[in-house]
Length: 178
Image (cartoon, rainbow, N blue to C red):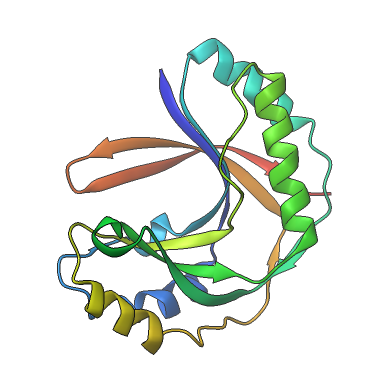
């Protein structure tokens, strides 16, 4: 079994700007710059033969390059269940179509449909029992986050290895947008 997801990488120059915001939350597990990405579809633990089928389906995706922008911040969970803070992605129809194409590829590979609504974001930190007021203050202080536009000409298939300090990601395949 291999844990997989499809994603758009965040350019390192934007990652450095995001990294500058990684403070002010006690106990946060801040993600390193090299882990910043916009998930298109999380596939989860996949058998090797299904991973091969998934790769073939992802290769079939036809999508044009696009321009994205990061905008705003948010969190997942509420109250004591807060578990992550993130940078948002400005609404983009091309990105949504690409995410939908990745969902279709997953289904064609025999994977179950994703039940959660698609919310494009860049996870900045995972939280464990955070102070709710501290998270609210961080969200308020970073609410006006906005990146310059950046060009996206590919997406990748990544594997994820769960470690005690957080996940480590490895790029397995690159798919060019054309």
